[in-house]
Image 1 (cartoon, rainbow, N blue to C red):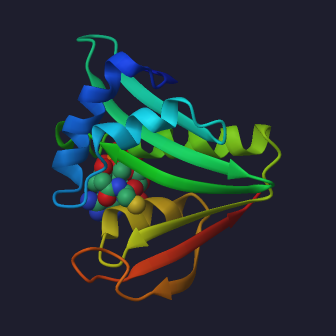
Image 2 (cartoon, rainbow, N blue to C red; image 1 turned 90 degrees about the horizontal axis):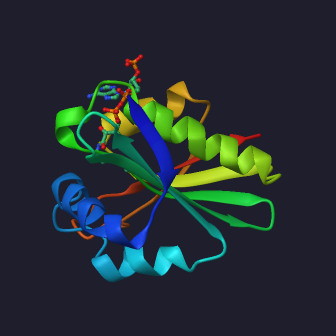
Amino acid sequence: MIRFEILSRDRIDEVVEIEKQCFPGEEWTYGMFESELDNRISAFIIGVDEDNGRLVCYGCVWMIADIGDITNIAVSPDYQRQGLGERTLELLIKICAENNMSVINLEVKSGNLPAIELYKKNGFEEVGMRKNYYKDGSAAVLMTKYL
Ligand SMILES: CC(C)(COP(=O)(O)OP(=O)(O)OC[C@H]1O[C@@H](n2cnc3c(N)ncnc32)[C@H](O)[C@@H]1OP(=O)(O)O)[C@@H](O)C(=O)NCCC(=O)NCCS
């Protein structure tokens, strides 16, 4: 069973480990995750496997006025394709709805098919592109979901 909770300082090292595996060369640093703890516009959730205590997935949304912005979502490679990315996303959407957001935006690397499919399946539509958005020169696909 996976239990979802809010990120705490003692779990940041585990988030950094997954981040390095999921976004090599573009990973958020320890300090970036730490700053989320005190960020009042941010909701940062983690999923913990209750069988072994491991942190296995996480996601973050910023909420400004009535606009949600999903900044990060990742699942440990050995836990992927078991529905955890979708559960994390559903929870972020629920948090946005509960906080009266009217729209949720996100950027995803063009070519990241697993993520793009995940977002489409959950009601996000492609609304634009940003060229040269990532360090490796790839474009970002902008996606939006209205609540
Ligand atoms: C994208 C990511 C979060 C998906 O998490 P996951 O737990 O493996 O995905 P789920 O098992 O919840 O899958 C949900 C849906 O996503 C899509 N999906 C997930 N992996 C996919 C793949 N390899 N190929 C195609 N579609 C995929 C499917 O639509 C799937 O629905 P289905 O199972 O009914 O086909 C995960 O691959 C990941 O962490 N990737 C690296 C980090 C990353 O790219 N994050 C997104 C940044 S914007």
